[in-house]
Image (cartoon, rainbow, N blue to C red; front, top):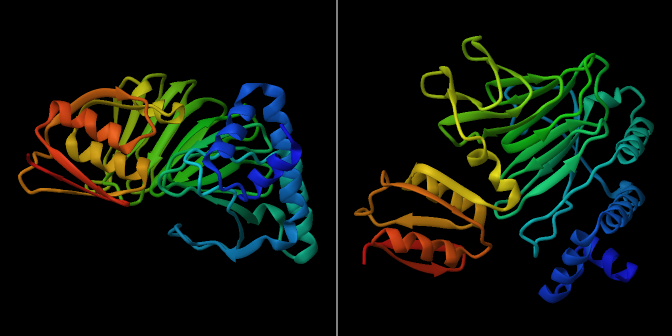
Length: 323
């Protein structure tokens, strides 16, 4: 792959779907290709630090903090599934840059913020080795450098964490009224501020989950899920098939006895569309299925095979009615 084409892709200058697909296929072909792509991307970010946009935090957190936020928009709008790689030397370079700008501000009070639009996904590797997959419509916020006693990040949306183990520095996720504390494990957090329920689903290890609303604390084991209701402020623990809640990072939509309204909500985020339903559509009808597709039309066709419905797609608007 020509380096010039890779750089054009990183800068978002490729407009041909064919060229974009060619670059993505090349990146995914081998670990060496992924490494080269990551090196080029981080080099591009570092050399462009003077153009970084700084803004104060507090955008989606209830408690204001005297901290700066550095927002990065690395997502190519032509690509549905974007990958964002932030490595140790990038964060270190950013910390030095910000400290030079304001010597009075400790760099662990300066935040990076990644906003993933609907219809996209991202992945970020933190400088402690922790990997975080970000689902559509998610905002993820983390400090340029972690404080000595903890590694704290913030999530509004859905993220899957593969946390690097550090016994003396617990990893803490604040997701609205939920707080998750781990030492090193793999789990999914789904906490969109627009949803009525939040979920923490554990694949391996152990997780401490607590509610700021009532102080309830749960200790999760593999296969456990913590469910927090924003209506009742109650935190409950159940057993689940964890694959149902983490398959999204593998580009797979899975549902098990999910009501139609839940399917629609995920489709809107997944495909970046607005779906309206005819009043006669039964939104409580349940679905159990798995589908791996990048086509909205294919997804609607699958639904129409099991549900009497017809649909009309008009740009980013979809209308579903009875036949």
